[in-house]
Length: 254
Image (cartoon, rainbow, N blue to C red; front, side):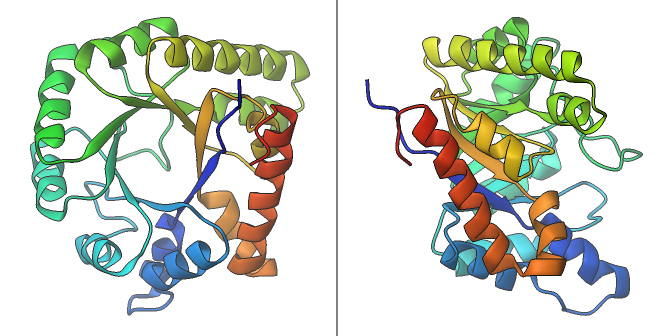
């Protein structure tokens, strides 16, 4: 069976982080999104957090109005965020866990522990024509919950795997990769579309792109950091090439 191509979603949150450190309008995440798309990104991701620490409401409105590729809104499952999503109507919304004290999203959503609330949120967003994903760990209980609440897509949290590799813990890294691979297969067999993200760099993105069940990677912090030295256009091209090399190992060609 032909493996489908793998898409790259570029997260522009941390362009806004740099802008907000000093105020004003520079650098502009919308301009970054346009550069990323021209360099090969298949979509743009932005996380509108409760505390607006990076992306703000105006960024979401301008991204939706300006970019030519799909906009993926990362959001908590709150009444405020659901209302914003239904007003803006991005192509997709990825429901993520959110705690104000965390530096970044620290783990997957506990879909299994909040099925009814998520079922309502997924239904409300779907009624607005928004494709919903749940950002979860590659655990059978969470995957089964995603199916139960009606989410058509999951995004597997790859942070634990990337952290283990960064720490040089090869055993933990190998175990986490097996968990991701098995989770992706389980989800695909259940009829879910499978995405992945968090902590990915060129090497880890290339490796995970070889898992044919995963059809999209969403990558932000690493790309924006690398762009400081090499430029956003160059690093998106390099990431696209790394993912395509990985996909070729799965027989998809990219």
